[in-house]
Amino acid sequence: MFCYQCQETAMGTGCTLKGVCGKTAEVANLQDLLLFVVRGIAVYNEHLRKQGEPSQEADKYIYDALFATITNANFDQADITEKIKNGLKLKKELSRKVELTNAPDECTWDGSEEEFEEKSLTVGVLRTPNEDIRSLKELVHYGLKGMAAYVEHAHNLGYESPEIFAFMQHALAELTREDITLDELIALTLETGKHGVSGMAQLDAANTTSYGNPEISEVNIGVGTNPGILISGHDLKDIEELLQQTEGTGVDVYTHSEMLPAHYYPQLKKYKHLVGNYGNAWWKQKEEFESFNGPILFTSNCIVPPRSNATYKDRIYITGACGLEGAIYIPERKDGKPKDFSALIAHAKQCQPPVSIETGTLVGGFAHAQVIALADKVVEAVKTGAIRKFFVMAGCDGRMKSRDYYTEFAEKLPNDTVILTAGCAKYRYNKLQLGDINGIPRVLDAGQCNDSYSLAVIALKLKEVFGLDDINQLPIVYNIAWYEQKAVIVLLALLYLGVKNIHLGPTLPGFLSPNVAKVLVENFGIGTISTADEDIMRFLS
Ligand code: FS2
Ligand code: SF4
Image (cartoon, rainbow, N blue to C red; front, side, top):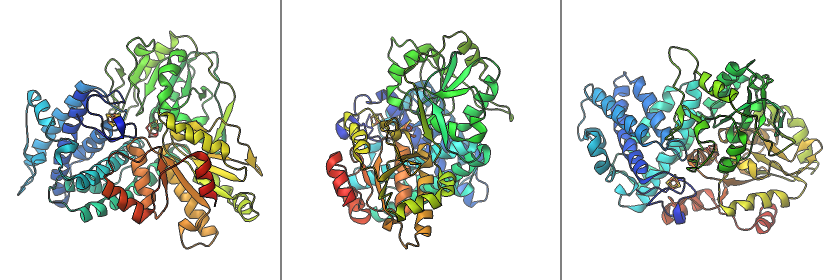
């Protein structure tokens, strides 16, 4: 295996024996083969689209399979194998409708399950010998994976965009080309960012149309006395259906990690048995799930495979693109009917209520509509100097000790600064008592990682209000923490929107070759982090 798609990759260069995330070599190799099949299907569907008859089955297959290869989403060898088999079958069907000349191996290869392993060893990251071409090809792949996750959540709410499908498949088809040049790949990377903005805008429209605009909300971090179900991941349709089905059953629902922002949506927070948020960012789940006592539902990443002696092992349920051996899978919606969570609810009733690990409340819900509603107050605070600077600290959290930097950075920021956050990165500082500036909290949480889109909308609005020509003239510093591929699409989207001088940490991606890193530094001013003290001094000067 060779995988270097996330920030925790071994030695910062690549996992080669087993993933630091817990992914086995077998699963990593099969995921490489799955991506290979996905690229082949994309080539065919791009042709079919030109012929005016794109396959919707292929559209869905592609984003679902990409999502399954994202970090911490799917660890299940049998499930990935099944997806490959389904993909090969679909590819064959599509190939009957298209005449291709010079078809890439991705299109022509077919094989039985016995041949999967051998083939997988030839189609991974290292198939591309030139390290700069490899670096950019992977960067685009990772951006597409992040986009695919957002496309799937939007699809679950009834939102789809033929333009986004067309782009994703065009990009995947381009990635099969052995003769693609560096310049072509750089252009493709920026185009990926452009469609990343559309993908996030689409999900924002899907979420806010379905559930209302996020509003300032107080979220309990303690527990109640009923048994509970803990729901993790990003899918709002899943939590809505779970809330509907648990209503009146005596079972409470708690959010975990990236599901926290569900509490900010009027049409979700209205459920009285949505009791609170339990625990912290994804990587603390091995400890925190022990004391939750009830079933846990993963609707997307980040899953950490449980230890063999974990007491919660038989309480894990998964759905969507997730995969984990031993977990109970909740099947997809069919014929317009909701998912069936009755097994989880029955299971919860047999469990003890959660044990409290924290008490108190969190405040969030500062997505674009809410912040724009407060615009006068915010602008006034900037004009009077009450707010000196905003710090966008969106992105992900992770296990590495070096991420303590973000807590220290937030703690040491002067009192006339405001943090704009989104994603699970917030858990590094959202429980600090950082106070407020004239009633504006010093940590404004917009929501999930995809709600970084809100932060961009807010920045564009402020640019307009202050009459500036360039988004980079705003008093905003970007200090982004990345971990997996959704942060990659957020980064590419920000670059596309013209944001410069983004600081990326805790380390730069291992998949950036020195030359590609140089291009990012020279053209976009991408920077790294140092110590909290040094950076605060540097960013405020
Ligand atoms: Fe955090 Fe994991 Fe949101 Fe990422 S819970 S690192 O999926 O996309 O963020
Ligand atoms: Fe390693 Fe990250 Fe890949 Fe897991 S996802 S195998 S930790 S690089």
